[in-house]
Length: 408
Image 1 (cartoon, rainbow, N blue to C red):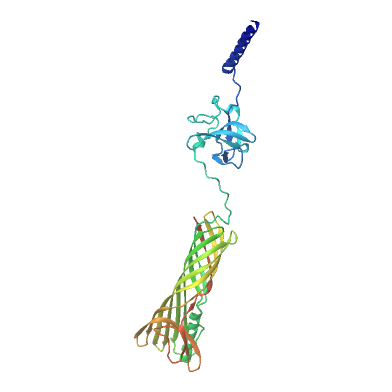
Image 2: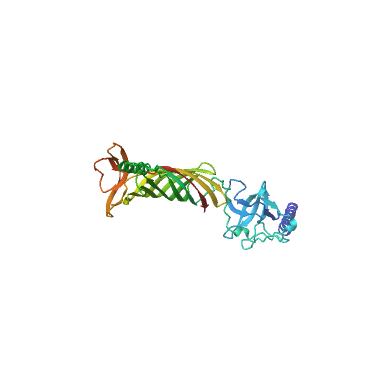
């Protein structure tokens, strides 16, 4: 009986002790939990990562002055809550060097009951941060800032216009003018009053489109134009007044080139590439002697292929404009000239002849040879004519131009 009474008393104590534990668990005071706090982004761009590791994936990028809700701090990282672009609530980590903890008085008086706000509620910025967006995390992440572009690579698409001067060889044209004056002097047995001036200088202009490639390389598409002309009036001694010889030569050309350019430094570039030239050559020879006039006029065209190179010095005026100085050279000899020659006789009659431009030498009784170029329907084979062949005009030379470049 005594043992039964003790067992009954123990059961009552156990029941009473268990009831007190249940009452304390459900109705007793709760343990304090870590309260959320506000963080302000101090850098222009900050990354929220998946885990507290600099190598972990980036979940979101936020801009400066964005207000984040911090949940707790783990070492050098803060656990924060945010909403992604779909409006879903998520958590991530941001490094302490990218944010600053806001003062307690600047935070709202009411705090959420849980550390992560429900998805349907929006996190409002504190009253003092009036410039902060209402929902900064809902905006698309800004593109990462690119490093500043160096002066050597800042050049993009460009368009330039540069007028200038070119010096051309035109050896056969000049030899023909000198040869014709010598031939007429020999036939008339009279000395010329002056030497024949050579044709070398040409006015030119160049329009260039720059297409940037990788690194410091660019592709240059050039389209230019040049024109050159020389007129000589040669009088002869021991002949009646008004007797003279007029020798006039003209050349027009449109060169188009495709060059590969590389920048040596921020101011200087080198370019080289092939060039195609469409050219037209004209001549006019007129002999006046004792009120009789005889003349020859010809016009021929041809297409040639050559090589072009250039150095370009550019000095920036602004982010879009630069001035340039160009020094270049050309290696090109054009053959295959075709055209028409018109011969006006002293009687006034005209004789036209279509064919190719030929170069040949005429030998006189004094055994002297004089080089000439004329348009003939066939290769010249007259008496005294030798070394006849199709003419090739030498356009080798160099140029100097100045202009402007516009980058876009």
